[in-house]
Length: 131
Length: 131
DNA sequence: TGGAGTCTGTTATATTATTACATCAATTGC
DNA sequence: GCAATTGATGTAATAATATAACAGACTCCA
Ligand SMILES: [Zn+2]
Ligand SMILES: [Zn+2]
Ligand SMILES: [Zn+2]
Ligand SMILES: [Zn+2]
Image (tube, rainbow over all chains, first blue to last red; front, side):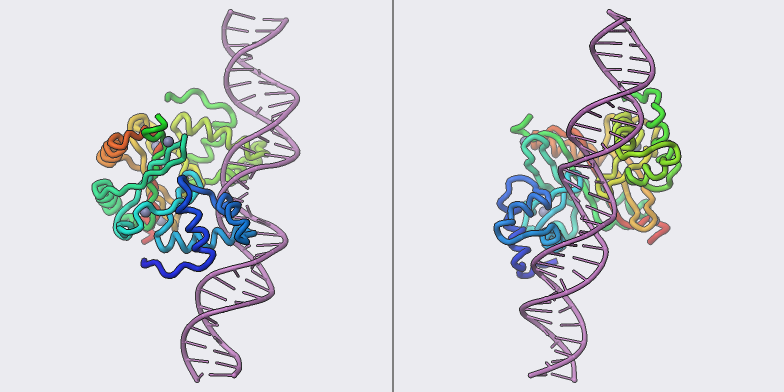
């Protein structure tokens, strides 16, 4: 999935996310973009939908929030799983990939004849500086 | 975490979940228990909170739903991670544990000095019979 | 008996996400 | 050029998920 030119709304949302130092909820993004003319949640959700599709943003299911991809260059996401460590104190997120975990999970799924489409690996806890 | 005697509401919620063949949302559980006197979401959420604490129920973050533990005997959950494969067609969930994946993730977290507290591993896709 | 702790019932509210419908702009095919 | 299509946008309304706040009941035990 290559990234086409972003539209105005997509660029605004992406910009907010890249400047944030922790994940943001859709409504937080909305609030940050009121000055730029955003009025309704759908403006955010529609932009996010595309950004997720392009792989430049990730959704953190366990905290209903969104974060800019930490590895925009490597398009590792195409083949591999992505995992997140989320600090419950400072909100900081570490994004990482591990082919070992990846293969192990995939092997198990294959043994069950389960066809994976989307995976979520999120660990909540406390980061080095917060513990 | 040993499981104490369940209270009336906890038992009702647990019973609904064990009889279901796929995960249920809190509000679906509420609807199924209207006849038993349930009127408000909190009655469900409070029971779920305890059942999660006892480890007899799991929460599936990616679909905002709850499922009874498939391995009530092994209290594998105390040490190890739990992963779920969720079929998007039939809703069926396969719960599994893998120490390899577990250790690998834990090693990585330790290398980052990240102290894990709660982990979510959920794979959505299609099960053997649905693909 | 009377706290302390836990469970419960109820109302209201907060947070997250989608449906429905209208408009606008760029693109395509003719 | 012009209809047809496609994709992006704006707006209002609503659905779905989750929590706050407060009051009452119940058990256990000092
Ligand atoms: Zn990424
Ligand atoms: Zn931290
Ligand atoms: Zn389990
Ligand atoms: Zn299935």
